[in-house]
Length: 94
Image 1 (cartoon, rainbow, N blue to C red):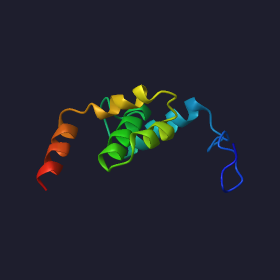
Image 2 (image 1 turned 135 degrees about the horizontal axis):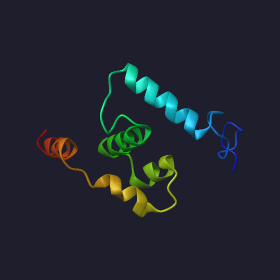
Image 3 (image 1 turned 135 degrees about the vertical axis):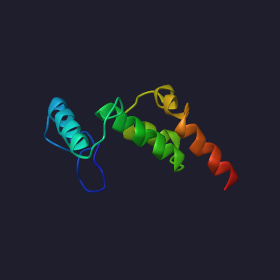
Image 4 (image 1 turned 30 degrees about the vertical axis):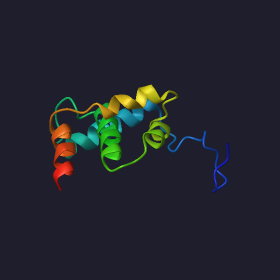
């Protein structure tokens, strides 16, 4: 599939391997002082998906951005709790 800018949607954005990207993300997060279980590419991906949905991005668009083949895989990110759940509840009152 070719996009509007004549690039293939199958073309990788970066020429790094998955493990190189993982190391780069971990190094940048360490420099930024981000620690704990969410200081990982997976945590970053989760945060991106939840924030995109919180900002009103359609579930089907987030599905495409995450590269999921099934909508059910993306729906996991709609099941929020803790601070994310509180943020949704606060939006109801403002």
